[in-house]
Structure formats: C-alpha cells, structure tokens
Image 1: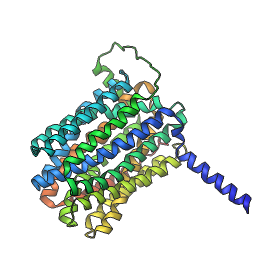
Image 2: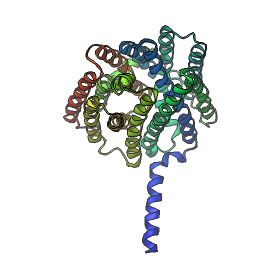
Image 3: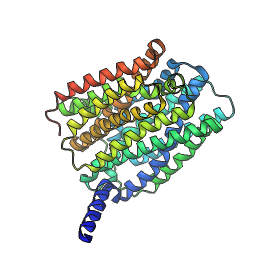
Image 4: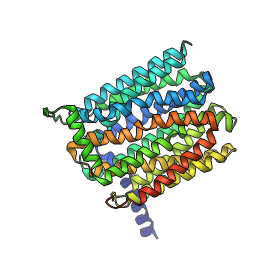
Length: 415
C-alpha cells in the first residue's frame, strides 16, 4: 500500500516538474516573475480604458476606435521591427520598450486623476503604446531562444508564458473592477505604471551572453522581403499565419465589446466586466496549463483545429446568454479556444523557423495576431452600434468555425 502511494506521489511530482520544467533556467524564472506582476497591471489598465471610454461616451463605436488606435501601429510597424529583432540586441530593446510603456501608463494616470482626460487623449496615448508594442512583441517572442539554453524546453517556456498572460488576465480584471468601483480608473493606470518596475528589474537582473550581431550590409526592405518569402513560401507557416489573422479579425474583438455586454446585456457594472474578463482568463489559463503539460509538438495541428472550433461555438452560445453566471461560464470556453490556438501556433512557429529569420517570422505572427485585431475591433464596434453586440459575436463565431474547417484540410506538413 505504502509502495503504491509512494509511486503515485512520485508520478504526481514528476508531472508537476514537467509542467514547469522551463523554470529551471534562471533568466526565464526572472522573466516569469516580472511578467506576472507587470501583466496583471496591464490587464487592469485594459479593463479601465474600456470602462472609461464607455463611461465618457456610451459609444460602442468609440470603444472599437480606441482599440483600433492601440493596435493599428503593429500592422504597419511589426514587419520592420522583426528585421530589427534579427539585427539589434533584443535584451536592451526590451528594457527601453518596457520603460516607455511605464511612461504611457503614468501619463494616463495623471490625466484621469486630475480630471483632465478626454477621449482624444486616450486615442493618442493608445497610438503611442501601440507603436511601442509593435517593437516590444516581436523582440519578446524572439528573445525566448536567448533565455532558454535547452531547445527542448522552448515549447514549455512558451506555454508557461501564455499561462502567466492568462493568470494576469484573471487577476488583473478582478482587481481592476474592484478598484474602478472604489477609486476610479486613474488608480488602475497608476498601479499599472508601478507594475512595470518588476519586469524592468527582472530584465536588468538577467545574465545574457552578449552576442553582438554583425551588420548585414543589406537594406531593411531587402531583408524584409527575404523574411516574407521565407514565411509565406513555406505552407505550414503560411497556414498558421493566415488562421491567426482570421481569428484575430473575427474572434479576438469580443474583448472590445465586453463593456457593452456587462452594462447593457447583463445589466451590471465594472464588477461584472471584471468577472467576464477574468472568466475568459481562467479558460485561457486552463488551456495553457494543458499545453505546458504536453511533451513536444506532435498533434498540435489538430489541437489548433479543435481550439478554433471551441472559440467559434463559444462566441455564438455566449452571445445568446442573458444570465451573468451562465455568461461567466461560457466565456471561459472563448478564452480557452483563443489562447490554445495562439499558443500552439506560436510553439509550432518557434520550433520550425530558422534562427536567422526568427525575428521576422515572429513579427509576421505579431502582425497576424495584433495587427489584424485593430481592423476587427473597428468593424466590431461599428457592427455592434448597428446590429448589436450579440449578433456581432455570432457572425464572428461563424467565421471562426469556417476558418477551422479550411485549416483542417491543410494540416499536411504540420506537426
């Protein structure tokens, strides 16, 4: 009896270690801790911006416009940032981008706490942070390979990174909803600015071997073309990028419309919005823990198909719910489907891409994920103002299901 219990305990311990195996790398441990704190602040700011804009304007279209302003720079600048990620010292650039993000949050806090904030301020500051993110995200994606000495742990590190994104996605909105109700949106922005100190300290504490990149002597446009033909000339990468762009355009904008559902559909307040966003984060966290537990990339192609199906069906069913408790439950499946698809796609891309073109390929992934989102947000905001939020999500869900079917027919060549 004791022997069987001991064996079960060892197996359980082994399973836990398998889920967190990338944490044995010191640099990644620092990154993990800093990001968990900083991203919680980021999600607090995201929920606060949505609530602030909707409180000031009561306009779904302006919700979409603000989201568009914060994401559109990525569409135009991420490819160039990808070339720079293959040229520049990624570690140094990340310190700069995180410092600039802290500055943006601090300015927002001052404007709101002094009562001077207007919608045009939010639009301009959203464009600013979008420009910073256009460089930060490809750099961060390409930086993974420098934090993980053992390439076999790369997929686990990506899944664990997704898990902290979604842990923060759970923690941030819940705290943010309470803080907005108690002290207003300005307090959320101030706390977010302070949270960046954690990730900046983590980056400065890393020990990165300095590998200065020799100048290529080639024009940026020429290197960008090489990266484009490499990515879109290889069918598996092309299929993943196109699917990511589709769900970013049709599925991801659900987050922009959550203030509409919280206030007008479910007749709640900032607490309701916080719980909706947190529930989506719980679903996404469940999905990323599952991915962290898996070994290798075998079978991820079919998992992506199922994840997008869950995302599309979840959007459709959530849109017809009028009970808060049911909506909290259903939105979990939306968050799960979205994050499993994105994390799985990221893992496959990081596994198959050539190191010399990693920054450029990950910039195209960023462009597909973040760059298509502003167009989806703008269209979703306009559609919601015309046909309502529920019908807008139904249409988005249908497109996700169609995309899943097309992708399933092109699985050949994917792990």
